[in-house]
Length: 149
Length: 159
Image 1 (cartoon, chains in turn red, green):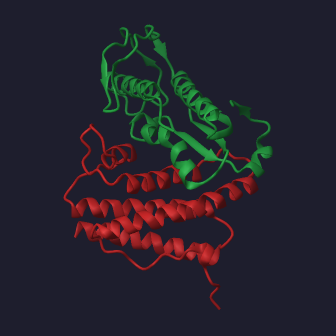
Image 2: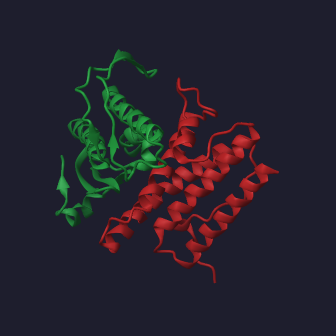
């Protein structure tokens, strides 16, 4: 049931991401990026439960435990999947950086980052799905979205 | 572009120092603490799986240091990395925003901004993100499109 808990959380976050895309198509890219990362981390944790591995609770520990290497990681994943996850991690961290005074510039930066984040997320989600974790409904890709109504 | 192992050694050494000091002084978080300790020359073999080589003997660490100084040491490593990335034509230019006791943010313009080049750029940060220190001393890379770099003319450019 613990896996289900993480999947439910991932679905919850995807619903939130989708509603952000519908309601705020041209803004809040920082929150959209953050959503994509937190969906990913919940899918990663669901995968860890499926594989009966403990990957940790804080980010540094999780980042160590999914990366292949001689440091005896708990659940190394493919280099590509690890890279996609780490890119989402880095960009979600920067999305919450509050040192930019010019919000218009910040929004433009985040819009560019979000375009790339969608690609990393799509690839990471495919990896998790191919690893046997049940996926939820296809995420709305904001930049390909057709307006409803 | 692979990451020079000496950068990884240095970051790992700093991470160990911070962990040691935190345990020695029972600190929950060293972020806002003055770390006081003495240490001997850093010596030994650091096995990374990339290369086995002795860590160069370091000058004795200062009897006391604060978080800003630790940030400065991390900053020094990142600046070297970004200057090297500039020489290798991955990075076009870069600047740093340092917020004392808070974080380090690097704005980076790539010669060619695409997924492959972002992946190369972030290799150092991928390593840093696996260190416990990264949660106490956040370091951010922000890729800046060429068209927007003029909006950051007041920042400290490092390459």
